[in-house]
Length: 124
Image (cartoon, rainbow, N blue to C red; front, side, top):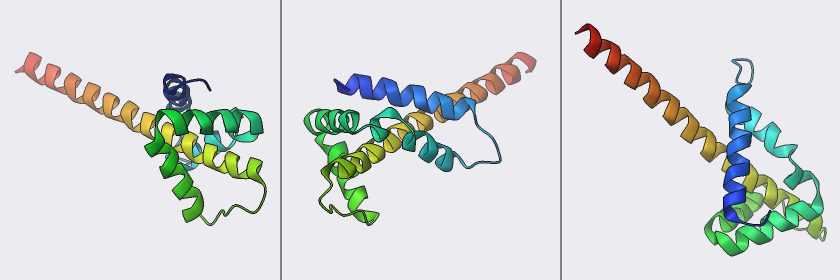
């Protein structure tokens, strides 16, 4: 991943996948976890390194938040730097998908409210 915009666009596409595959059988947070866990930036070491390094440079706050989440979830550095990078990448992707998904939900809610207002005014 070369830049922050690419990260945002990637997470947006994954959030759209979550939205398109929504089911009452699976919690949204669980689906986001599954998608993040299986994405290329989490399962391939070199891509995890690219993402983590890019985020450290372009948005240090999100980078720090992901590092803290790794620690808060009990994942301590035990000598395998590649595995540690994949955990940081996981939390970056998971948080990015979650943020993008919330934006999609807000837009859908506003669209529904706007349609109700139009119908009410039209009938009124």
